[in-house]
Image: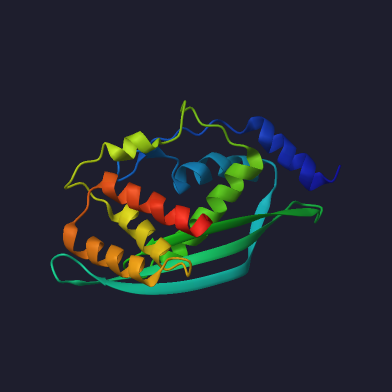
Length: 201
């Protein structure tokens, strides 16, 4: 076994569970980027493992929508594929790939996507357990009420509307509905599911 694989195996033996302690805007728990990095930094240092990233593919889109208040809202979307090379002191190396998609209303979409890609690549590589019994369920989202921040769901619906499989009429009707009706989380989730069924048909 190469030294890098031996060191990674030792990290795997020692890595703790990382609970989902952070709270999302729709009242669900998740493991934040900082929680994962904090848990792994000491172990990587102790076992002389370091990472360098190689961006394999990146794309950036932006789309505009007019909010119910008449304000123009620009959403930036970044999709990124990164290869992470893990090395150790004898120059032995291995790699794992990470993919992520992130949106932002300003200039942080690329930074968010990079952080998420690394987080999920590490979680997958080390099979990091969580102390949670279950992940967020649809029912948790449906319990959200009108007036709560549905930004994430709205952005998800907008991203689905960009797919070429969505008929133009459906795209226009849904976009107008988003901009004028201020839909709640349950309605947004139902719309998201319908759009996904069209795309996956």
